[in-house]
View 1: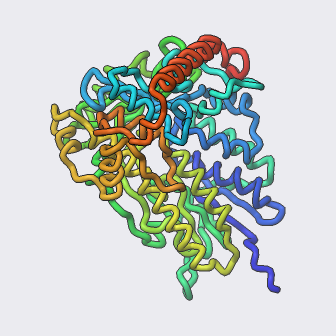
View 2 (view 1 turned 120 degrees about the vertical axis):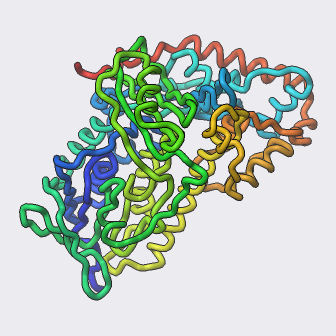
View 3 (view 1 turned 30 degrees about the vertical axis):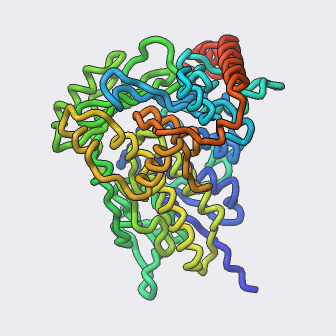
Length: 502
């Protein structure tokens, strides 16, 4: 049998996406079997605003065999237990999207159905009281699940907040130690094979020609290979996600960092706040026809917790994705593959799953089209699922106080989202595909947080003895309060285990 293995992979572009790909390939593919080269130019900057993550990143770090304390230390990181949404439903209202689950199912009925039943019986409690993660987040506390932990820790989960540029640098060191070769240079020409249009090689400004079997495009919004060369096309979702610009600025810390990201609705979009050890990352994502860049920058600067450490930096984007994430012998990752605003911290995750999907469907030099089609089908499904979850935040609102929010409130939902929302309204049930990124607890947090209240609860909940349910839920609230009360503050935890070197 002929050896059809890939002999050489070229990654175009560094930054978070490029070095994540390089680090993962260095572990799984191994440069001794297949040469891995990453080309990046110091002349070309990276976006570097993807500073918040979701829990699956722990799987990626585990693949790379990273030490968590060392990783946090080297990226100026903090721990993240969820996202707080302020003023999204209406001004003055806030809710938490915590990581992990609420309570625990019992008697074959989802936990939240028992909670809905108690509310219907005139005994309302806040759903966050049944989340160990939400309670810890709002208390400013953090701990890793201890050995022999209370079973409720099975519902607890966390992610990270870190400096994206430091993360890329950290992964670069990891990848280079395993044999990835970095080439400094600016690509001035991309050459294709005459017979099939596959990418053959790239030409650097200094005249060096670099050929490969497989190319990974991490060149950012411009999509040097996937779009400028292969003309793959872009699916525009700005009718559902109308924001098209962002202003980003770091500021000085103001007090201990909180173990969660905050998203605050503004007149023409929303503002992020990501607390790190050495600073706070901030940004205003907005619709540029409804507010000027100067007004957006002024709003952002007026709502910082500390002194700004730079001038606001502006980014332009169009929400959507490439029509094909993988075209011929080129795979796009990160901004080269699409953009979904960081409302739910999915930017780095979509890079991670793109890499994981590649490793699951890894090609040989024949580039089987059925493999490529399957990759693209799965990628499209994931992007559309994240899109719907983001649209829910905008569309399910009581706000009508600005042109932006009026548009969002009255826009037509994607059919796939409309079905989920209507299904939940009836009996509080959730309809999710097993491979969707956001699971029951996430949809529950945002549906309820955005004011969508079920008409009724699941009738099966009535099979449980109401006094027993009442006692079980009361005991759960007590257990959570006691466990959180024994946790250290996040600041104390970081100081003990993973404080960054100054």
